[in-house]
Length: 144
Image (cartoon, rainbow, N blue to C red):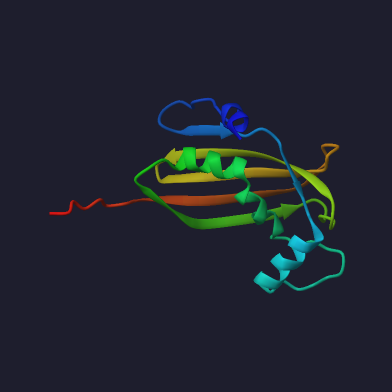
């Protein structure tokens, strides 16, 4: 994981914005995990197909969580604002994929934007996902 953190070192954009490009992340649509996601989200069961929102599970990978922590920083609370999915082709159950992701922290308005592409191991695009987190300052109170 330390190697991923080193690779996630990024280009500083002009001004206060921060851009983090992550190394490719291997992911899989394991049948058991897809079934659990379908049950927990009450997604319609269509035999052999992965629910369209399933890639959100991959955002909890250690590599993405580490990069998000870096981009978010301290003293703020990340608040989920939006997410979207767009697919060129359906994801198959028990198949391997690769995520290429980039995080952009903006200061006006304060937030983190995640842009990711889901690819086959051969590099063919399957879809894109985006997520937006607004950053709300946490008021620190002194105990007096």
